[in-house]
Length: 100
Image (cartoon, rainbow, N blue to C red; front, top):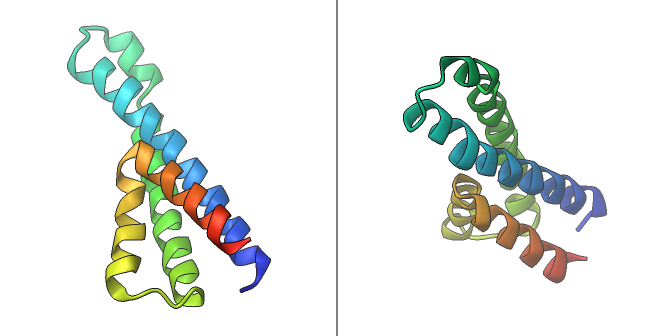
């Protein structure tokens, strides 16, 4: 497998994980738990950036899974790993361990 595919997936998995952490533990609590409109205004960019990064993560995961000849089930699991912050980091570590 080409090294660029692995590196691209690892970078996107880390970015998706960081953005998920920001979404789950910064933006959502500020918007739904705190009554601070000025603070909510400052973090309103997080869901938009997270959405774009997750879309690119999905494309990168599909590309990597195709190159690695994953089954459809494995590909779906890899894509869903980007939905929870910790799972994307775990997926990145497993890919780094098994494909480099």
